[in-house]
Image 1 (cartoon, rainbow, N blue to C red):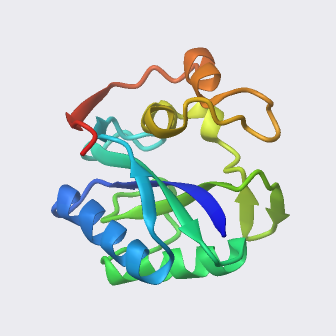
Image 2 (cartoon, rainbow, N blue to C red; image 1 turned 135 degrees about the vertical axis):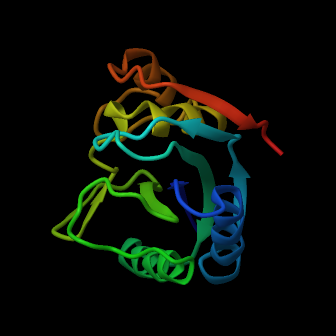
Image 3 (cartoon, one colour; image 1 turned 60 degrees about the horizontal axis):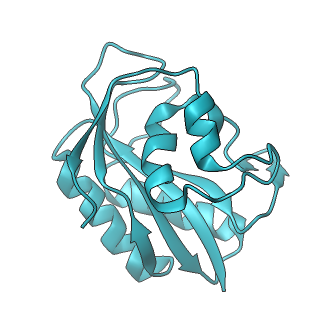
Length: 164
């Protein structure tokens, strides 16, 4: 059995329902959700002229390989109304990123694990720190808590819902 940390986020439609539906589908298709962070309201990153996001980090167990996991997550995004286009950092119903897969480093053209920008994004680190604060980034050799403390992103975030 493998474990993975994922970050889910969206800023259009019923944001809370989109997070819940995505987790339901992840449970059914990918593997059980083991833990989840609070839901955070976060300012948009990159393209700031759009609504705030709801973000949540989850830990799952899965039998899938990293590539198979990515394929299933893309299917879940599509089932949840995600339309991928050329626009970077665009509004979306849901986005699901693989942050970590066990302690592995994956460097393929279509998949990078650990996610290459974890350390730069407070909207990822704050939810992840709730469920994996002591997890050590396999390339940076720092805990998630350390990365959050050192992060230069000071975007506004607030907790919408405490950890269930």
